[in-house]
Length: 306
Image (tube, rainbow, N blue to C red; front, side, top):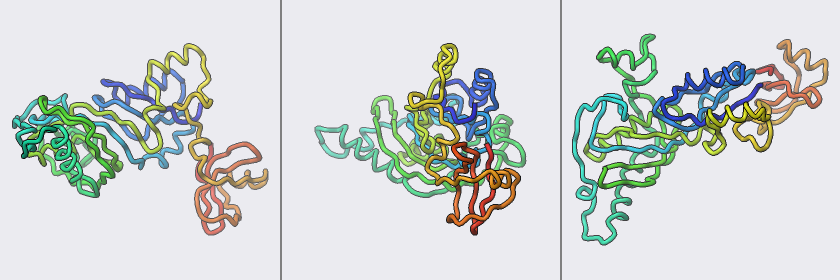
């Protein structure tokens, strides 16, 4: 089985747990294009079989999340799993309701959205200490567990859009949807939003709803996957949006069909004269999908063979 399967990761599962489970269920080589925190849920694309070869085309995808931010409390992990370090109470209504407005919710909503809008655009973000980023060959969370201070270089990120979805002025909870670049840490974003509100905060809940073109509504839970396997259902088909073949994945790329002689050269890594414009192409031998090729300076070269 070669392709991409979209898993709707449930809470408490690590990305490694999901990879191991799918590998066991389908008895195939499995890889991923990026991890998701254990306490986060949502879409996790996994590469099956020969699809592991195309990971380089999938690692830079933009992401979309729904996050729940709890205000007034700072934790050492910047999420609900950590130890409480400090508390700084906040009353949203007192902070934002400046007029005798009969519709306090609308005024509060408007002011919270203004705060969120401050984060749209490019910026430098410092990753949280409890992350898997490596410094000097060691993961940051390993330093954190040893209570060791380490200098973390900020990273370039971009917030494309951020929208307030809901809030609870009593519990001091803000729920928002954010569209962002690869490498953006929502835990850090939550802390930064809280700081803008002159308080502390941590990421209480997180759901990833989109990775590139892969959407949460097209994904499948592990339990549903097990059920389909028990029922011996075929994954490849229009009803199963959670499974995408490699050919379907690159369907937006133009097609080049090669004859038998050209295919042999292509498979052996020999450049082939080709008048197409520079770019990436799907390569076929008659109706058979072979893989991907890169055309440059009127020369076609093998990139990935399935």
